[in-house]
Image (cartoon, rainbow, N blue to C red; front, side, top):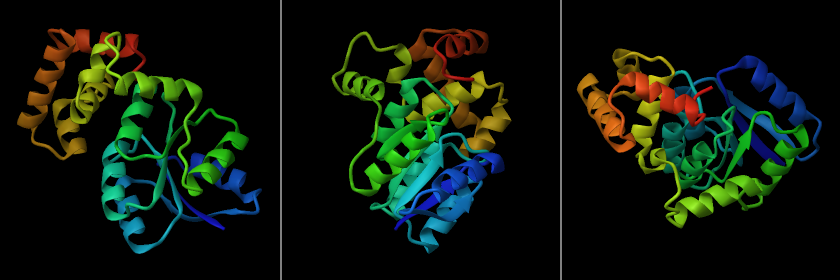
Length: 210
């Protein structure tokens, strides 16, 4: 039996995932969390085979939670879930230790296949994501400028583009406002932009925010 933990802040999403997996004979949901803090706490206390982890959580970024979970439980297979179609999120998740990346709009059968595959010790990516990852590792010179951002810088970019204030970002990233300002400055420099308005337009143009 594959023991699965679901981490997603939307109750209706968790319910939908439970319903899909309840129709299988070899997969059972044995844990749930709606925040990153809860997820880390539960993983430290209970053993799971696979974690379904939303990349966008209310308290902390899913990538940060992924890194913490892998530090505490290196053998846990983490399958990232996201509404983002942009493959940059998938590339960053896989580099951070995820064994797979699945869009929430995927068919139920694809979710079941992905869970079984990562539980067996394999990775799960779509052909499109595999190509993006190959390009990133290969240092493709045609890659967008945002691929040069660190995870923290990329998170800062997405939060600013989502309309978050400096204090909001500081609280969400558990950093001082001064540190967040440093990340913002680095983002503007690396993307060759001059202000937040240009940054927001850039993020939407590159589909980094919904």
